[in-house]
Every structure is written in C-alpha cells, then in structure tokens.
Length: 134
Image (tube, rainbow, N blue to C red; front, side):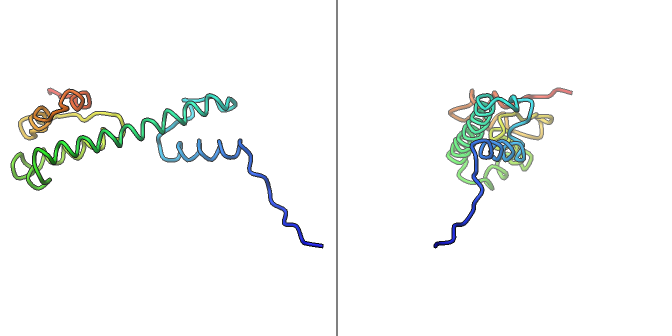
C-alpha cells in the first residue's frame, strides 16, 4: 500500500490574507482601507493598491522617457540646470511612483519647474508639484 503524504490545504482565506499582508507590509495598503471580514472589500482594496502601483510605474517611466528625450543624460541635466534640479527630478520619479507630489522650496536653486514645463506632458507632471513660498 502506498504511503500517502498528508498536506494541509491552502484556502482562499489564506491566499487573501497573504496578499493583504504583503501589500500592508510594503506600505501600499493600510488596514483602514478595507473591512477585515469582507472578502469583496479586501479584493477591492488590493486591486486599487495594485492599480496605483502599476499606474505609478507607468507614469514614472513616461516621465523618465520625456526627461531623457529632452536632455539625453542625467548628467546633462545636472550640468545644464544644477544638481538641485537633478535631485528634484529623482524626487519627482519617486512621487510619481507613490502617487504623491514634490515640494519645491528653492525655485531659485532648482529649475525643476522649467524642466517640467518644457516637457510634452507638463500638465500631467505639474499635478505632482507643489511650490512652497516661504
């Protein structure tokens, strides 16, 4: 008689819990965004979190492509507009991925506004910029 291996079943609840815990652990979902005992609410929250991730990656990829089309290299941005502008470009990539915005505190030191306004999708990118006047 063959020896049968006993394995524990992996349920849909286990699967859902793993996905939700993964998204929470990576900071793209928080427990206030879904009802813990409602699978539909969990699914909607997880789907929204994943959609935000994919949209952010697509936006940041488009931004980088437009940036490089206009300046050829990242070094060129630093040489032409200064290192603060280059740093703000990198902060912008992060903001696009997260669906947030950057704050421009030193417009005299950073030319990020000029760089963005010279890009084909400037209106899209400017949604992610907040100029802070002190």
